[in-house]
Structure formats: structure tokens, C-alpha cells
Length: 355
Image (cartoon, rainbow, N blue to C red; front, side, top):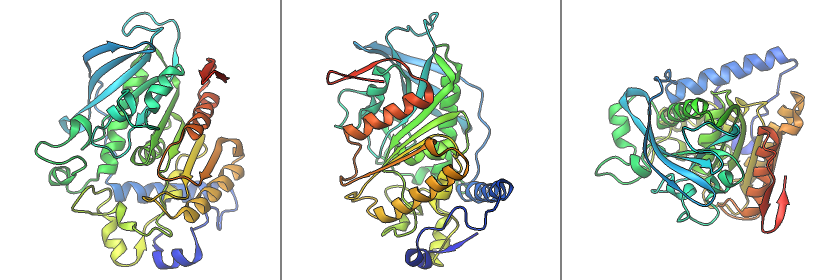
């Protein structure tokens, strides 16, 4: 199913439904996309048994913040914050089960702190904002960030990972770790296991939809500035082998040398369909500047959701801003999560009540 990249750059992003006349044909295509995707990222191993450790706990005006660790594959442990609305005390009989969100951080050395602490950057504290809306939020460190930076290495230096796992990929590793995180959320009495979403910006955005594409426990996805098709990309090597700062999918390097790619990323998002999906992109994004291809990809996804009879499950917005997650877009994204995860708690922002 390989595509010639130079041809895509001229003709546009590949149509999702080309040659598809019925649902059975779509499932066949989807199965082929999934097979190729898993082959290129190196596969997803089975989860290990849940083992959760609470390192510390602190309380803010709106929520409890637990610093936790949990096991992942090959003897690894994931560090994370677990944010729980104040009406529930951890390990006590809950008053209610909350919808939950796994919140993935962007490319920042501080990892989970950027979205979970008041010291985080402007427009990045979505983990705090979501717990204040009544969600239980799990905010893990991705490998190479936060407390999971390799000793003696800079943040997002993935070389030690590939020395240990030469046939695998950091993409698959993060998916695996995040699936373990969903195990954590499903184990909590304060969480409704049928109402779990995923949200992220940039690096966190594509980690969110990568997870949703292989784990149907995710019931809604929010992606901010993380959809970057190969089509029209000025730097398609972003996804391949790089000596620094980060290597996503090494196997694609050989394809690019032949002017080929095995898929485009709207097809990877299609693995989520018809899971409710919210997408945002900025036309002045200096990291992913090919906004026209992003728009074409979102249009293809909208057509797919419509064809599946789930048009209302897909929303996309494009602004004139840069690589950011602005407040007005976050509010729209939170309302989208509220709708699909059943969060009916009244929310107040700047004096206005939001439902």
C-alpha cells in the first residue's frame, strides 16, 4: 500500500474511501492499514499485571494530586500524576464515578509537570483544567521526558531506547505505556471505565490518537496541533530516524530514501473511527506548517465519519494562530469531551457557566 511521496505532494492526500463501495471493503482496508502500522512501529506487547505505587499525595483547593508509578513492559515503570476532584478521597468509598482522561504532555523536558502543575506554561495546563471540570486525570511522563529522561542524556534523547530495543519504536513504547495507564484508570473506584478520553497537544496529540487507534476503551479524543501528514510536509523526516532529538519510527527511513511512505497519518487517525474525535490546527504553526494538507486530511476524515453514519462524532477547527492550544479552542474541546464522556457537571469559567 506504499505511496510515492512526490506524487502525493502534487496530487494531495490519498482519499480514504477511494474504491470503497461497502462496509466490508472498508473493514478490509482498515485491517490492512492496522497491519502495516503495527509492522512499522514494531507491534504492541500484552500489558503486564497492574501494580500501582503511590509515592506522595498533596491537596489543592480543587483536587488531590497523587504522584504515582505503575509497571509497564520489560521491567519499566511509568511515573505520572493522578488528579482527582476534591469530593473524592483516594482509597475511600467514592460519592460518584467520574469520567476520566489520560492527558499527554507536549514536547517539553518537564513532561507531566507542564500540564499538571500551576508552574506549567500558558495554554498547556489542560490536566488541571480538566480535573477542575470534574474529570479524574492521569498525566504520565512519556519516555525521555520528566522523570523518565535517561541518566546522562538530554530530554527526548531516544538513543538508549533503541540500543535496548533495536526492532521496536518509541511510538509503540508510548502506546504500550499509555495502555497500562488506562488499566490504572479502570482500576479506580472513582472512575467510570466506560467514559475515558485522551487529550494532548503536539507530541501529546498524536500520542492520544495513536493510543485510541489500538485501545477501544478510549471513548473520545482531542488532538491539538498533532496531525502532521506526510503529504506536503517540509520535514517528513520528523517521523523517521534522527540522531537527535527523537526518533519516532526508524523503519520509515528506508522508505523515504525511495520517495515512498507506507501510509499517511489521516489513515492512522481512521483507526479510531467512529470514536468521537476533535482536531485543532493553526495556519501559522512553525512545527507543522503544511496546514493545507492538514485541512485535506480532516476533510477526508469528516467524509469517513459521515459515511459511517457518525458525522457528529468528528469536529475539526483551524485557526490563524501558531503551534498552540489557545483558551477558546480548549473550551470547545472540553465541551466536546463533556458531550461524549457524559460529564454533566456545571462548569464556570470567567463567570460564565458552561455545560
